[in-house]
Image (cartoon, rainbow, N blue to C red; front, side, top):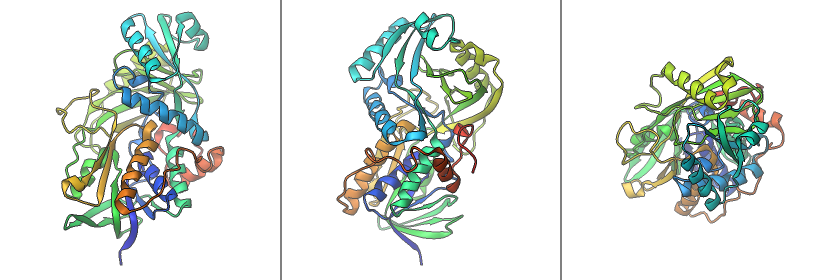
Length: 407
């Protein structure tokens, strides 16, 4: 006898856990399966930035608007899943002043708070900032602890009746007469799950899962390196104010600073080479903003893979691919009961989940509003409780392992 559920969510990163939470709080019977521990894919291997939207302001107004809107929501609902650090966009002497002005003007147009400071004022805030810092502007960036964020979403989904299965890799998908009739999950499930609707929230692996259902979802994943060094004297996030390039962000943790990142196209998000030049380049470029990190002891290094959706991009294209999200209703491809949510950013996970849940509810005939923007996550103000959720769902990732307590 197969397991039965109204909605099966495949993928247990922030977006998948967010979809499960959103649907469960609308009264939908949800099952979530994740092939590893929760957030073991892109979510738990990111640099953990809660974007203000300034990074995209001059090039992608819609994406920047999404970020600042979700930034404000997550600050209200996520508690100790985030650390409110603020951020600086840093113009060094070699950087184009027109780019700085264009980004600052775009922030004002979009409604992203941005306060310019000269170099001396900037060094009062960050004494170790590079001597050739011409000017900066302040934005409401923050740090996300993704292990806690995903686990708290999964816990709220479970508390509203959802079933969450880590270590349950999908092994087979059966499609008959234009519908997914069964998804076989191994590992902790080892059974076939029958659902009225299936959500593909597998991120960089969306193409592989969709192919099991005979669908084509064209992804162009790119890898990026993060290097955590022993440096606890940084308060705000530092962003290099130039066209996006390797090594242009420094993310503060409590006693460490995370330096990143690179962007190199990969064919397979499970099987890719890594290069030491990525580590060296990230350290070198980040040290141009913050010189002490050049000699700071390296503590941890990890790579993550971005879930970029690129149906019209040439192979190998890197930073030009959209960081926006795309909701694909596969009814247009001949499979009536399945959708894929692809692309996006950690900052916009909740918005991606809401859009997906709206579609799913329309498809299965559920009339209920989204409440995730106003209801705090469980344990939001209790780090120990959040870390217990991480342990429950085996959700620890390298991004925040220096902060999240082992249970």
